[in-house]
Length: 156
Ligand code: CO
Image (cartoon, rainbow, N blue to C red):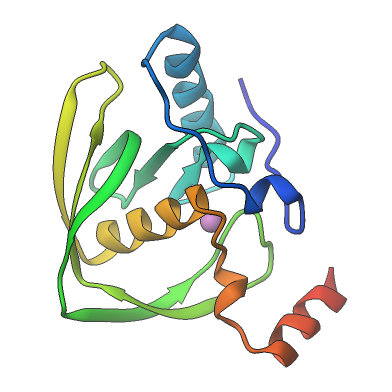
């Protein structure tokens, strides 16, 4: 089922999302719906708060691999950084250059409820860091200075 994407400045995007206790059918269906929604809008990733569910679930697709991670946690970050433009389905029309770790290790739980540990680098590492930010109420607009932020808000 296609889901509605919540847009900035909706307050759900600023909440600390809740841990998922069990990957039950409701969570699995949500992951499937999020995947359908991400593909429909041509996104590289999506977090549950962006579809109105304040739970710690993200999906990512770098064109090579598709991931769904429940309760993702960054356990290691490289000191080496990468810098590139990012967009966000919740902030249409905005692109921000952001510096992020080049490699990360993320722990969490997968679609089948199994514990996983993922080594990601480059684009996949960037997507995962962006989506995990969403679970903590952090958005790419937070990287802009006051004037840039005002200009974007006026354009909405
Ligand atoms: Co986003």
